[in-house]
Structures are given as C-alpha cells and as structure tokens.
Amino acid sequence: MKVLITAGPTVEAIDPVRFLSNRSSGKMGYALAAAAAKRGHSVLLISGPTSLDLPEGVDYLPIESAADMYQAVKSQIGRHDIAIFAAAVADYTPAKVADQKIKKTGDEMTLTLTRTKDILGSAREVMDFKGTLVGFAAETEKVIENARAKCLRKSCDLVIANDVSRKDIGFDSSENEVTLVYPDREEALPQDSKEHLAFHLIEIIEHLGSD
Ligand code: CTP
Image (cartoon, protein in one colour):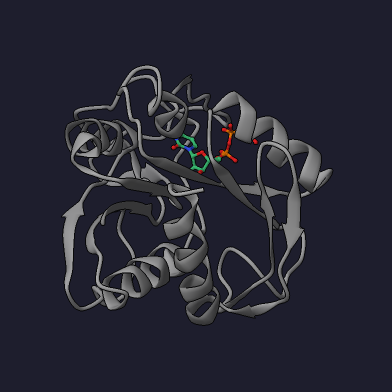
C-alpha cells in the first residue's frame, strides 16, 4: 500500500534569525515510516527538521512551516491509501515575518500570532481523502475523552493518544505508551519502545481499511 506519514515539529519564522517551534523529536513518525517500509509499503515521509537519519527505502519531502506541510500533504495525499499524521504542527504562526532581524526596543514586546490550518482536519473534507486516516493526540488530561473528540471532529479511523504529562514517555523519549481511540471503542497498549510500537501500529493500521 502507499502510506503518507507526517512527522517532526514545524518551524515558524519570526524574522530571518528567529523562529517558533516545539519539542517534537520526530522519533514516532520516523519509526512508523521505517516500520511501514520494512513491511513492504511505499512510504512518503513529510517532515519538519529533526536530527534523525532518514529510514531506508522511504521517500522524503522536507518542509519547515505548518503552511509548507499543508501544501505538501494537499498535493500528495490523493495518491495514498493510508495517511498517518504524527507531526507536531504549530497551531499558531507569526502574523507576519519581519524582513530584517527585529531590533530590541522597550522592556516588552508582543508577537501577534494567527491560527494555522488544521492539516489532519482538512484531509477528508478539503482534500477529499478516502483512505485510512490516522491522527495522534498528545494530551495532558482527559486523554481518552479529548482523543475521541479529535477522532470524530477530524473524521479519523483511529487516533493514537498519549499522555504527554508523563516525563518517561512521549515527545522526546524513546519509549511510548499509547491508547488506540477508535470512533466507537478504545484499546490501551502496553509501554514499548517507539520502534516496536511502530511495527505493531502499522500492522493494526494496515487492517483498518479492510475491516
Ligand atoms: N494536526 C495537523 N495540523 C494542525 C494541527 C494538528 O495535522 N495544524 C494533527 C497532528 O499531526 C495530530 C492531530 O492533528 O495528528 C492532533 O493534533 P493536536 O494539535 O493535538 O489537535 P488539535 O485538534 O489542534 O487540538 P488541541 O490543540 O485543541 O488539543
């Protein structure tokens, strides 16, 4: 099958030398890309900057901003059977990027941010994606409730939820513990390395389209 995966953080420029970003390492998305390629799928990885090596046999489309990622996904998603959104996309971006380095002036400065487009949330209605759609939900409270709401709101077949308030798993860690949240049920998986978990998740996601 053809699998599109988004991964890593996005980088939102403020001026030529500054940006807003987040702590996503990209490990989960890259592990999913590696696992999908090893299982014989054709994989396109659309990723923000990370320090990770590109997994073998994976096509790579590097992007920086949330707007770049939106355009890349929009132009590619139609060719894919499965789309997995593991990227930590900025929800807000600077309203304008200064052409020159911003000089300090007063004791305070205010940066105006505007909402970015929800890429996962646009997959069905705006991009008309008909394949298997999988999102992630990084939550600090009411994990299942919030993930289920996300799953329904964004018309996903599955949302992979994790509790990012826990320091030992998630964002920057090599391990993860997730709950699979479907529109009508959920299933908790045991804590595992991101590599191991990725194989398991790809197996599950492969079968979703045929259920
Ligand atoms: N996502 C996306 N585009 C965005 C924001 C998020 O594709 N602009 C995707 C992420 O890759 C992830 C899922 O949406 O798969 C959940 O992201 P999250 O930011 O937690 O969801 P939101 O709906 O933005 O909810 P909130 O910020 O209110 O928790």
